[in-house]
Length: 180
Ligand SMILES: Nc1nc2c(c(=O)[nH]1)N[C@H]1C(S)=C(S)[C@@H](COP(=O)(O)O)O[C@H]1N2
Ligand SMILES: [Mo]
Image (cartoon, rainbow, N blue to C red; front, side, top):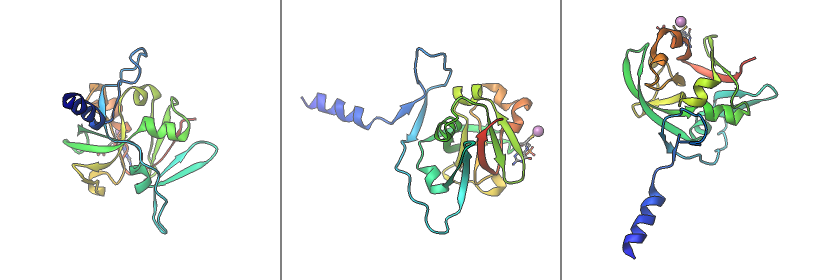
């Protein structure tokens, strides 16, 4: 009896995992762990600045940092090719952001505060946990480390760390939209 209860408790407390998605699908999304499930979206505090705009084409959804952090969060360690060292990043997957904007499965554009923009292909963000990170090694990401919001790609596949993907590592990100 206690054994069984113990097992149930364990199962209940197991971290929310995702990534397996549908084994029948051809998804290559590696098993990764959501470190936090979605929370109710908090109201923006008066004067709180928007951190990210998700443009859907029809409308703009402005999110404060607190609202972004209420979305499901992932965490993994990856080597940042431009900072030339590894960080454990935490943030929201582009996949979850695209779903929130209603353009899941479409190539997307990530726009930066300095006017830079980059296209990230659906095939990449649908299959791998490319994230918009807001925390590195447990702390907010300083501008010197390309924060406060910066796109990071997982350690695998290796092509994410090669020259053809260097433009995908968008720092100072502030808007995402479906690519035209
Ligand atoms: N915000 C922002 N992110 C950006 C860029 C940029 O100009 N602005 N350039 C991209 C490109 S094309 C490359 S090659 C790398 C360059 O990073 P580095 O200047 O730190 O080597 O950052 C990418 N991310
Ligand atoms: Mo580049």
